[in-house]
Image 1 (cartoon, one colour):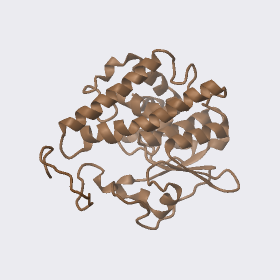
Image 2 (tube, rainbow, N blue to C red):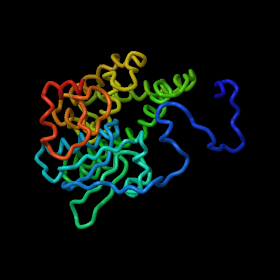
Image 3 (cartoon, rainbow, N blue to C red):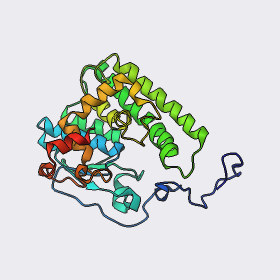
Image 4 (cartoon, rainbow, N blue to C red):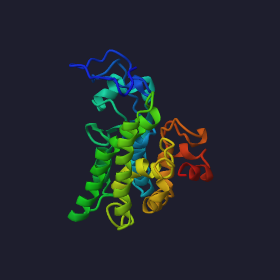
Length: 292
């Protein structure tokens, strides 16, 4: 590999070598399926195909919150998609999500199945379907959706940018780490200022904006992402930490965070979820540990 100082981009880029680093095998410059594989279908109205990454956690947290509010129609099967093994490139998954990224959701509650891809779209679909976690007044809705879309636009700088170069790249590049650390700190400051004004991102109430942002920036503020808490001095963001703690204490968040999870303490992994009873083997103290 060339060093950071002597690389000169070719006139036309060609994909002719592995790009190195963790997750290198899931990256390619073309779309579409690589193999035929149908997706399983369970008994519930909602079928989720996912992995317990921050993007995946958004949807399982939302579904658990809806169930906690008594919406039986939010019952779901959460099927594990092992992205390291290329399962997101199977024909069935690509038919639901042509972008081949987790999560993917199929709503089978109506006469015709509806596919939803992109986690923000799933949160909005579920909020509108069940009338929860989305303000009904025009101004409140606009504020909520602004923060939801802020997260969708900002997270790539945190994940694919800072997280990749800080934790996963095959060698450290000072310029790249500095560039994305600066942007990540700026985003934390955006949240810090907003959460100094209101308890939650959209105002006084917990909404899909918080559900979208918490797995990424709440996890970062608690030192759960990339082992970068000290590097980014996350303890300085007092309002973000207050908000992260409040959300992390919610029982539905504790449940949703462990669904489809493959990393960390095995006791904090519920690899697939097909019934509420699947959580019963997890004791309350273990669920509490999942939020810390």
